[in-house]
Image (cartoon, rainbow over the protein chains, first blue to last red):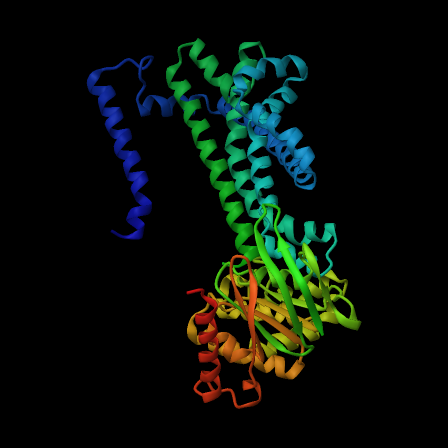
Length: 254
Length: 246
């Protein structure tokens, strides 16, 4: 078993699965509005490529904006929680509560409150994603090794020196893990919010592509949008993972 | 001279870590705090560092007063290096915290790294260093500010025997050269006998000083098979046998 084989294995499996799928659809003569085969989906994807591309761009804009906003909010809250145990005690339960409430349930409220549709979508995606950054960064800040804190204390370090030269760099790997998780969560939040907003009359993003295709019973197009969404999620996760590795190897050595 | 009078330490939970500690530590001595796990020797070291304060009793620093930041070098059981900083940056840290510029500090940093046998490793990140080398960087970091008091908390416990022997010899050489006061926590009888000129033997629950042994091994050629070394080892072993109530 060579390394190349291991790397190729998922793609060979995919080809096999697609082949079996297409064969089953042909042999069983399944109509495409019930279960389209890969060929029908690929054709639909090609036909609708501009609309799907525009939908993807719109969803990505929401995801990226939400991820940036989550990063700022999550890091600021984590710093405040690390600085003040009282603040932590006051805020933590509500942050958890916001996290465990399904975004579908809050999205209609947010869309009513935040009048501007784009901002409303970003707000929903943020609700889903900021907790990953907050909790990971807070764990990193709280986990600064006691011995290093002692060392800083013995050398008369001030609070800002401890933060700048110890706690923040120590928390960086934790933050990057949080960022990677938040990336895919922001995508999930954006799509859910688009579904809610779409049924309320505001059409945008990949979710709307899926809704519209289902209204018209264009099942192959639905699948095409779905696959695009899945691929986008994987791409976000992989690129944030690569960013994490790049930053940490550059900083801590290979 | 540091004088401890009736020093006791009790933690919030009510656990008595140390009770009735009386000791005198001469300036420039190499002192070993020797005892089993849980005898409070690390707590005693923390009291001496000023990181903790005694619940009762007093620590008298003599006419010099308690040490200022930078006058204490502290080496932990783990090397505790900053993983993102290279060896030179790690050693520079104590000086950096006290506002010494990098340009002013680097000659001293390079010199101490060289003295610890790490010339050429200035730019190496901790990840690429072996356990023994990391501990050398950690000792260099403790010594960079030329402390008058060097505190070490079981620094070599996690190293292999060969590396430990080399580091013990290097530490002795550094001490002979600089003559700072060294307080060395260990649970190894052999290590205490080999290194220290004064060995404080502690017993546990609550932590007390059982007895103090002085050793004049230092002025001989340091041989691990010298009769004086073996005599000290047996003397300590005998003390521990007496310290356990029958």
